[in-house]
Image: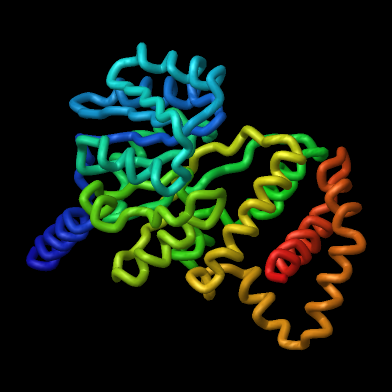
Length: 313
């Protein structure tokens, strides 16, 4: 009898310790730049409205997009609890997220990129019920694309790294801004570094700052959908911009970039010189392949290495 009572008490204690109260207030914050977020916002709004007693808002801040895209996205203002803010000047991926955090009114904020899809009908509910600590990243899944799409090939090749199980092995290196939840007061106290004005690595540096502050990142299994793949020329251009950003902040990002680690390991000047020479001779041909209809992932890796070393000078 005593053992049965003890077992019952223990079961209740374990349940109580593992119980995570559902969040009842949520600000969903979406920065957009030249992307159509109408379907994404409509899906988020529909899911949030269906949850009883949830106080929510969706704030979309446009970061200096083309006028035609702004007109399209402004249609979301007709949805309940949705606000669209147009900003004439492009301030960059870090500053626009800091701006959104100041605009939010609720303690829990969910950041999403403006080109993500909502792949499940319980996406919002899973976030509200998740044990996220102070910061959590939900990951993303890769949709179906064409073999002629370099972005699709690249994302599909890296897809195994996006699972929650894999991300937990290196929690601070597998953090991205496309789908993460954070307490608003923490975001205001530890904002994104606004030196990062151009594409790339503001999320990596943010993860580093969280680690330095002793704040853990939880990795939950609640992915957003990456279903929209830009054309090859655009993706190569974004990659080059990201590599220039990486070079600009290489001192800040050491230990958080495999490319920097790889380059720093090449102590023999002749090896670095050969890679640089190869890029000077064949970089334009590699780029032509990457922007064409039969892009090679192996060439993409080589091109990125050569481009980075060429920027380094």
